[in-house]
Image (cartoon, rainbow, N blue to C red; front, side):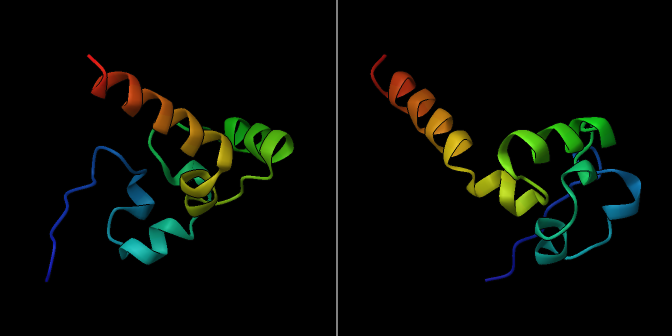
Length: 74
């Protein structure tokens, strides 16, 4: 099944035309609003270097799961 996504507003311009796999393997600064300085801090604090690392980080997945649980309990 093919899925089409318009990620222009969520990604820095240099990453807009990349495949999903390429975006996931790109530096976290590829995400719009994440600066190089932010990326350096994520790496120093959590070892997060790529978008994939951010998406699979145990800290961020736990935080997202807690949020979903709270929303489901309303």
